[in-house]
Length: 213
Image (cartoon, rainbow, N blue to C red; front, side):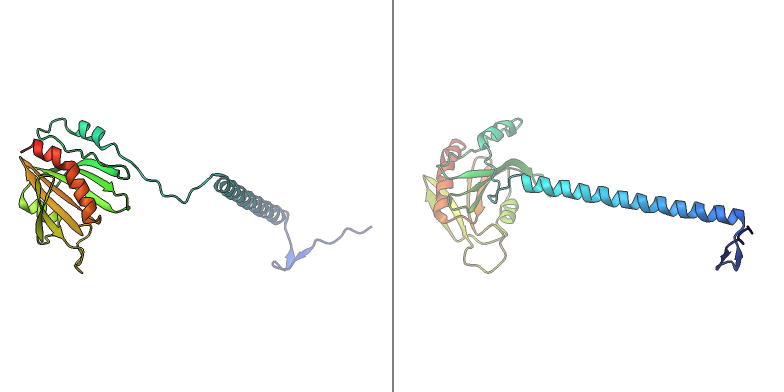
């Protein structure tokens, strides 16, 4: 039986040499391994995505936003170290929550203030600042350089009123503000709460302010 003639390779126009055949098979084997590696990688990625999706579906979630309720008195006790002026802690009625309490120092002049942020029973914001050795510029910047609109006495303490609720100017959170001074402290109350809610906060601060007079 006659031997079959070597296959002519179209790209070459002649039969392959043994070396060319070996090289071709090696290249085919390499490409096969690469395709297998890519398939395995895609398979692993899909498996990871499936696991993550399953975890997301199984973990219980709530649409209710997480609210912090800071223990202002405890933070004040820690912050008091090294500060001569007593830090004010208002005792507020039920429904008030604090979401922040800390010492804040302004870089421009180094003035330090004791700050506590509150959410009122109507979910409005009321911030309390006790500036330690503060100056008029510090107070004015907190109140967005707005102009005083009156004076009110709350539980024996005289407060200067900054009522910006009807202005179209951008005053940030300083929609309503109250300012009082006692000893080396300047007390600034500001936020979006109602005047009645600010009166509650100011009244709760009266004992601390009286103690510094």
